[in-house]
Structures are given as C-alpha cells and as structure tokens.
Length: 240
Image (cartoon, rainbow, N blue to C red; front, top):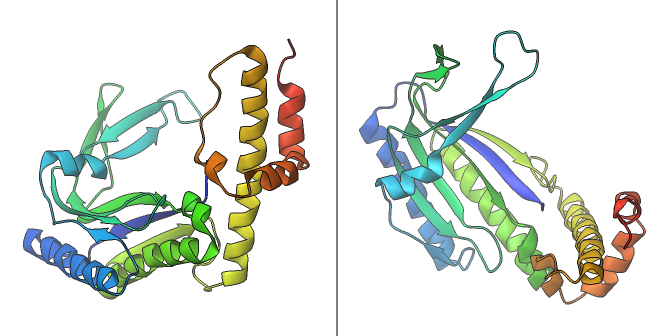
C-alpha cells in the first residue's frame, strides 16, 4: 500500500533490437544527467541478462471458457530486452526502465491465445510514498524525477502511459500531489497502528511498515484513526 507511479512504455512501431537498445541507452544518459544534477542518487549500467530481464515479467488475467470474470493468471517472461535501474532517492523504490520483446502467444487452459504484446515494450511501477519519510522536498524530488524520466522516454519516441496516484501528472498539479501523499500517510499510519495494537494484544511480533519511521507517526496515526476505513478496521478486528 502506498502512493505509486504506474507506467507502460512502447517503442515506436518498426523498432528493431538495435533501435530498442539505443532508446534505453539514451534514457540512461538522461538519468545520468539527473544524477549529476542531484535529482537521483544512482544510475546502474544497462543490462540484458536474465536476472535483470525478470523485472520485465508481465502478468495477464485471462477469462476461461464458461466464466464471466478472469480466472487464470499467466506470467509472460521477456524473450530478450534491455534494462536499466535508477536509485531515485532514500526510501523510494528503484525505478526500472526497459524495453523487451515478448511471446506473441500463450498457453491458456490447453489452448493458444494471442498475447497482444507486439514490438518492444515495458510495464512497471515505482512506489514513491515512503520517500516522504524524509520530508516534502525529498518526496517531491523523487516523485518528479520518476515522472521526468518517463517523459524523457516519450520524447525519445516511445508511447508512454502513466498512472500517477499523486495526481501530479499530467497537469503538474503540485497541490494535489502534496495533499495525496499526506492523505496516504495518514491512512497507512492509521491502519498500521491499528494492526500493531491488535498484534500487541495477541502477543504477536507485530506488523512491520516503513511508516513507523515517519517523524510525525503518532500525529499521522491519530488523524488516520479518525478516518472511516481505519475506524471500520478497528471494529472488525476480533477482541481477545
């Protein structure tokens, strides 16, 4: 749980392997400029080995014959590709960027179905929520750096779809971003506090969450506890 940026990248139609690699090379160069400017912490070498390509796995939920809702989950591993990792900032998830080629068909319930994954593409997300443990300025830097690199992929010719939980993108609404991260911190603190209290009463080890490290955790927990979902959670937890 936490505020994240989800995204899909698609290379321009007709891009070949060399072209896909060049796009990621150019994207890495942009990330290196970000590092020089202090906008991200570290940029790692371009990789194309299986250990890194695993980051490019895509899952599809498939509706089986006779069912009206998805009943099967299919994992699609890249056939080949190029990946670069960016350490955005403290307590922000790493941003993984790449372009990969995927199987055109998959086996579902004993039958071959088309995946629809043509060309070179990538799907991913980056959770920026807990960079807010270090204040608004640090969180803003991390969140905007992720969006900036995704926009750089667009300017390199990729089709880019972005889903921003912070609602900063596409209108660059900084007020919405700040409101959303603060609301999410309150919600997470309230829920984590409720679960920790319950575990403590049961003598359990207790729930673990990065939100406990927030310098204003008690204040956030109190505000979050007043919210409907957290109050409902506390009521639903069984008593001793």
